Length: 83
Picture 1: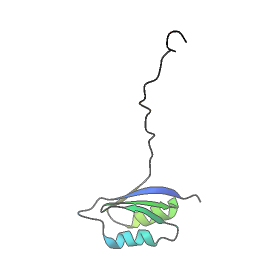
Picture 2: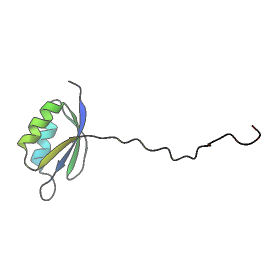
Picture 3: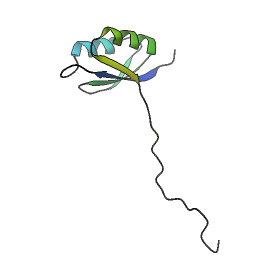
Picture 4: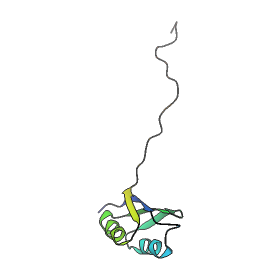
């Protein structure tokens, strides 16, 4: 199966338990790409990660979403006069 990036968010009080973070990092097919006190960015197989997160209290998993940056440069509506 292809590996996808997922955002895991801890919804409990305080920072995420170190034991939960260690369980996610210990998954054979998972790579923790980035971490903050309450969130993890994980590249993994969807099935394995979802089954692990279902067993961890107060965690939510969602696929990573990317949004393109809009092009804000001005565009000429017509060529300049005399061209």
